[in-house]
Length: 228
Figure (tube, helix red, strand yellow):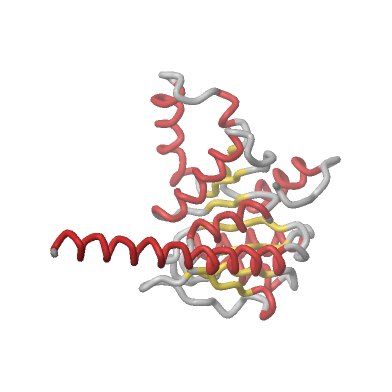
């Protein structure tokens, strides 16, 4: 009897998994339809825990404002912290301000600086990450935690494996990022787990001027379009 109950529970899980495919498809369709018309954008990542007034928050506002003034929209994860700062900078510049919000039990809520028609809600991290990569012409990565690192290394991996076209990945605040990338060079590169050119598109900077110059220089003479 116990074995039959175990099999019954397993079958119910498999049935629920099958129906979840339709919800996943719905998130992809919604994302493609809304983001397919927004034009060239740059994604800004960083900690949800960074508060207004913090140096990293204010730098993210300034960078995002400059990005918008240069003619790009800004995409963030839609929540508080650096995400809010990114949308605030775009809003201050009158630029496109997109938020890809994720349903979480803590930290996450829509920030008030997202364009009303460009606030999208996702249940699945992997669908949301596809939208970041597909519709971004560059990643600007501020100090953050595990989620920030996840999005950063996802982009590096996709570029490394030629699953997407190359785009600039800009890490802001050298004091925060240098230790990590020194380890990557001294350990991973040294034993040839990565190739030297895998790091070619990664820039570590400290100012908004450097961020905009890198993006503009990369796209000079290149077309701007979705990445896959």
